[in-house]
Length: 171
Image (tube, rainbow, N blue to C red; front, side, top):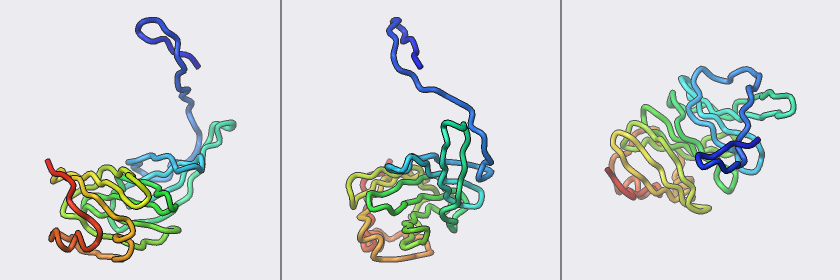
């Protein structure tokens, strides 16, 4: 498809088509490309589920399958990591969860209400943007994975650092 810019130049434009299929959840908070697979990851609410969405462009349809259910009701942020693991950020308890093959291998409650975004910096480093309060944390994924599951909210900076999580910035 083509679209005219304001000065009249024609440029490539996205094509929007309605897809048929059954919505996997009542609320879908995030839609992220799933690295290299051509599929998509969906974070949902109000029951904290993560889905994989497969689009059949030729049939203009989609299907979904559940990958995991988390312990927080809203999944606001998702990223597939280079090693294939999935990192998820939740609300309203500010959970950060690392999943491998659908199983939780690490989890911590950050001293925030919500995790809104995740940015993969390199194979072992992720930045985590939060709300209430507005903070950015740097996560060493290997250190986080090694500490396993902590169900409680961790407010002590030294205890977070022990889990590979350090404060990068704050608003």
